[in-house]
Length: 312
Image (cartoon, rainbow, N blue to C red; front, side, top):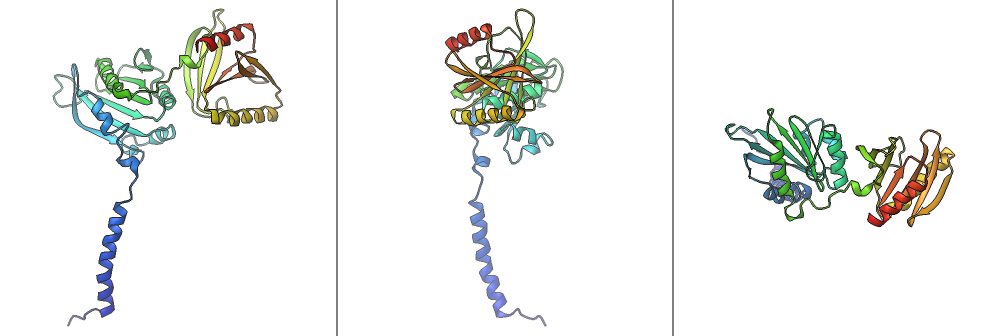
């Protein structure tokens, strides 16, 4: 004969059911807005991207990824993007006539939050390719192409040789520029002095030249008219960051026993140092940025700074 549970157990189970239902409802109201907001990588962005760019046709469903599930798309490389400022990713596939419904190329649109973050990723990912006149900066290879549009880093990859990625890239770029989606472009030329032929530009996320206080640095190597090579580096620095960065620089110099010589050129403060390893170098404190050069402050550099002040 089946034994019936005690009355108190049955009452407890009856009360437990509405409690569980209430808990499930409450948990359902808790969400991460970043997972549901498609701004800059979801619905509003997809509406700007082309369905067709002759001879390309978009196929398959658009896929969107957030910080929480980026690893599903680029497992093993997601941490790199997250540490670089990643916000969202939109993935689209396009085909060429004759390929049926099979994609001929994939387009990844990364929202990196800031133009400088996007630039850093572009240089790391495809910076070794051929420089191309597209967007705010572009590099290309045999089957890949990457370019910038404001805070977006866009990567295109073809599944075969001879695919016209450039035409597809131009169509995607036009879409991003609609409605100022690509606003806030990074003008690299606006960060540096015109000192000669540009040889290379790179982005260093942290510990520039082993100096922990220099983070997110853009470095440019150049060749002077006399054939000598030089190096400039630039940091985008907000007004709030200026004082703390200067204090970090002064503390470093004091620790290393390096004297700082201060002067003013074109209305900007210039701090000059002599490093036993790096030689003479200096930092020009401009509104919104710092500009560094590995050379002494001579008449030629003073004139270049004055020209930069007039036309910058």
